[in-house]
Every structure is written in structure tokens, then in C-alpha cells.
Image (cartoon, rainbow, N blue to C red; front, side, top):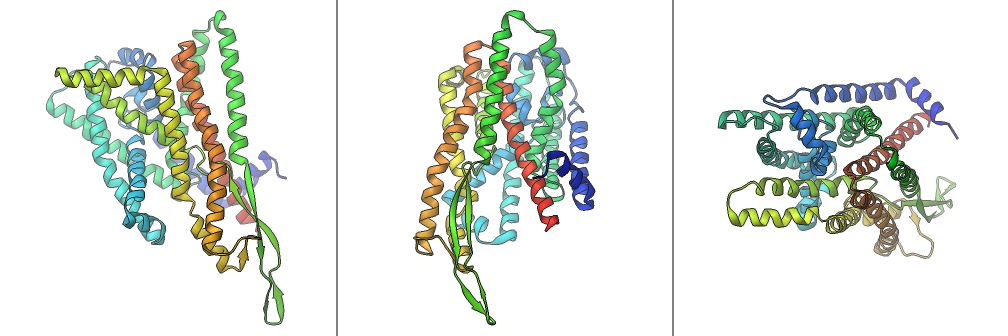
Length: 423
């Protein structure tokens, strides 16, 4: 088995693979440059104080790839695009036409599906941009803006979000890995030096047991994520013997690998994206003068500030999206049809719909384990933050989850490219 360094050397020695890796690095450099170009009228001191004491905006900063920490032109990050993608995928469950477009019309259908996601993303970016600027303006982070200045800033940050979406799609097409996930990953990694520096300057000897406990938990979580992601349930598959041109083919035994967690880290990203959008609306509502609106805003704010209710809702979303994303991306009927076309069958199971039902039943059982684990891992940092009162634990735990999931996906994509070129 090749070591990591041997694979890395092999990847760089291949011209096509090297070009893809360099394209990803170049695109991420462009993203980091955009992330430090601020919109006008910012109070840096108030911004730093505000972000350090607010868990919601800390999580939003993760999804903006660090762009929110500077109130940059890409401060919205890829959040609107992720939200639009979730909406479109939810609509496939309710609309037979959209489901057929995504699953049955091939590459052309998927391109049209993605185009609908892009169109939905623009109004979502406008809504989030207006809400975010008004919230920050009330906190004194951004200077009070007139109608024209507000419109200009909303147009700029909406265009920045669209540009970031386009950059992510270019990474997915011409680079390696999922472009949107890599942008979030790059923002988290870019913030590491500042985070380490903050921990050094705010280090408290009395908190050493807490830090050691968090470090131990982080190591266990990382190991668990890797184990769950790599775990497979093999389904035995046999190929029938066939005679062609006087020669016999088939008769071999192989297996169909079903991963314990088919969705990877996507459920966590989806769940956080869904949680962030209503929290932004709540932050806007609590500043409205209307008594009824203010009461609703405070009630919702109390819900999100309740650690137990927040963690339970977060767990449910991660659990739901693990099943939902697996159902969207993995079609047992398609697998069963392909097996039947190639003369393959599962021993003891009739081909066709029976095979599809058999695969679906196994997938449902193993996804339950993956969903429970992923949900538990997701809420653990939130629980630790509720116990210790240290906001950075919830934000840092989420960052660890995303980084590990993205790295595992990237390594697998590179392995697949190397294997394809070796054969």
C-alpha cells in the first residue's frame, strides 16, 4: 500500500493531476484575496468585539470562509448557494418533474437543475445581505447607511456571493474535490494562526483540564469520523457464466460496497446552513419596534439560546439530512438495473425490484448508525460549550468536523485520479 508521501509524489508527477491541484490552489488564493477586501464604513474594533462574543456570527463566519471577519465583499460566503441547493433538493421529493430532471435526464438535466439553484440563490443572497447589514448597523459595527449606500453594499456583497459560487463550481469542474466545501475549508484553515495566537494570549492555567478534555474529545471525534466514513457493508455479487465466441465469461464473485455514511460531511454543512438562516431573521426581528414582531423575535431567540433545545434541533437536522442526502444521491433501483444489465445478481435475491428493495433495506439500516453517530458528534461541541460556557468550543468543534470531512473527501478524490491513471 502506498504511503501518503508516495501518493503525493505520484500526484505531482502526473501533468494532468498536477494541473488540477495547482488550479485549486490558485482559486483558493483568489478567494483569500477577495476575503480581505472590505465594504466601506466599518469599525474594525467594534467588529472584532462583536464577533468574539457571538456564537451565531462565529458560525456564519465559518460558512463565509472567513469573509465575515473583515466584512469583506464575500462576507455572505457560500451560505446562500448551500441554502438554494437544499431548497432544490427538497423540491425533488415533492416534484416528480424535478426528480426526473435530476435522476433520469443525465448530464443535461443536472445542468438545468443546477441553473435553477443559481437563480434561487440570488434573491436569498439579497435577503441575507440586507438582514446582515441592518443587524451590524444596529450594533454599531457598520456606519448608519442611507438608502443608496445600503443598496450599493447589498449589490456588492450579492455579487461577491455569486462570484464565490462560480469559483466553487470552477474548482469542482477543473480541480479536485467539491469546490464549495473547499472554500469553507480554506476559510477555516486561514483562521488557524489567529485562533492559536488568541489561545496563547488568553491562556488560563485554571482552564488546563478543560482544554485537555477538549483536545482528547477532538482526537476521539476525528478518529470516529474517519472510522465511520471508511466503514463499509459489502454485499456479495455474482456474475452469471456466459459463452461468447466459444469462450466463457463471468462466473466471478465480487461485492458491492455500501458505506456506513454515504453522505460524508454534507449533512453537517446542510444542517448548519438551515440553522443560520432563521437565526439571522431572529436577530433582525428583535430590533423591530413593532410589539408583536418583537415578541415573536424574542421567543425564537430564547429557543436558539436554550442549549438543550438548540442541540436537539441540530441533532434532528443532521440525522434528517444524512438520510435525505443519501436518498437523493444513491438510487437502489438504478444499482439493481445496472446489475441486471451486466448479468450480475446477489445470491439468494431475485433480480429487479427485489434486489432494489434488498439494497434499500440494508442501506436504511447502516445509514441509521451513520446518522446517529454524525448527529452525536455534531451536537457534542454545543453541549461542551453549554457546560463550560466557552463559545469557542462550539465553533471550534464545528470547524473540526468540516475540516476532517473535506480532507477525507479530497484524499479519496486524489486516490481515484491516481488509480485511474495507473490502470
